[in-house]
Image (cartoon, rainbow, N blue to C red; front, side):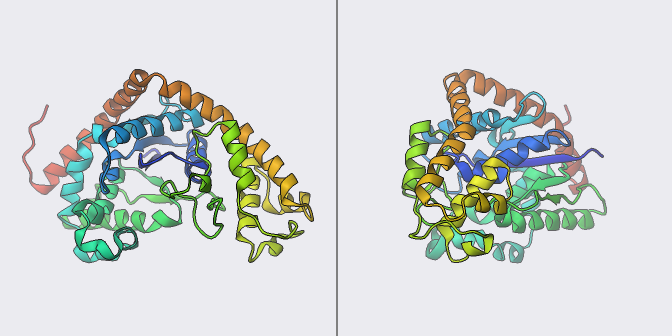
Length: 335
């Protein structure tokens, strides 16, 4: 069986530098060695209230970001999740064999629902099952995961195993995590102890992929720092989260080891370092922003790309669902 990747991002708010360095840039590298399926998971976005026009725009923007970052929609399959209804269908079928106890252990529901869990929608509670369906529908062999997604992939493996045992088959492969060495964890520009987030109230906390050069320069200039010169060793970053974050961003964007970047700027003040970081960030993100804006200026073409991707995705998904129906004893009209 060929190696197949499935991964996706929700179309909520603008994607930012953390999404790029932590996920999309790595996806671009996967194209050489894997059959890749990249999805804009708009059904997952519905787990919290969405304004319809904003969701539609964000779906196109995420797709445009994938392409602008270097993902080839001809070589890979690129589509939006809701365009392939089979995701939701398999999600229901798998939900029927998923014990509540497994879902009760999922930490992200507790974090997102908070004290209002009794008012949270069923989708927010059960979306890990839909995530498992996303992966298993394509018999994906590998899934790129960060720390916050490992539990979801483990659940997908558990559900696949439970299905196979219940129906006496090895139909669904157990997907493996695709790890990229030391993961780039990008933190907020306003608080180095918090992860850079699309939902942070302050736009100055993140570098959006849609930001132009002037905006990037301003945000880097205003990024929070401390009162001390930059350290002369990686160990000297301990207890200095903002300094660590900015140096880590520089290392990731320049493809240099963190220790080398720290040595290059040892003892220097933040103002000169920030100028270099700003120039580097603009050199990487600037062309991406230009290409993204070009793509967004032609929504009809973006929609065509996504529709073509959905057709290709459905061609893989339909026989998988047909076989699932057969194994579960369900009657499904055959084309």
